[in-house]
Image (cartoon, one colour):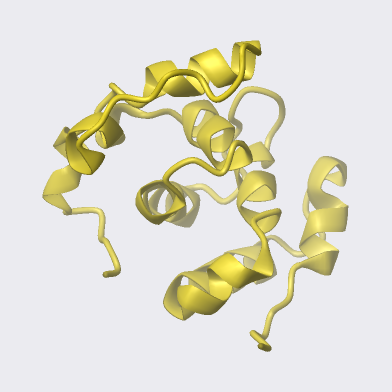
Length: 135
């Protein structure tokens, strides 16, 4: 199911939606951070939070729509590191995910096309992201 910005899930956390708490995937700081973010309502997650969760491949079916809504408003929004890092995280999601979500892929491709070569930090991701799905 494709989600939209008006989705009532934005007031609920990943734990509430998925029905379970999760201990950190690893004892690393990012693992602990992402485990903690699972109790935050989706609508309250920042670009940095979304980028961290995407980087850890956590709950992508719930996180990616929120990231796409944010990127549609500001394609080069800065997360924790630099302008465009949320877009970079989305562009690094593997192709199998996009094959199961072609409409989301089309949104990402349009956003990527809109930023051209983008900032140096994500230029490689922008150039390598497949604009057409094959599979």
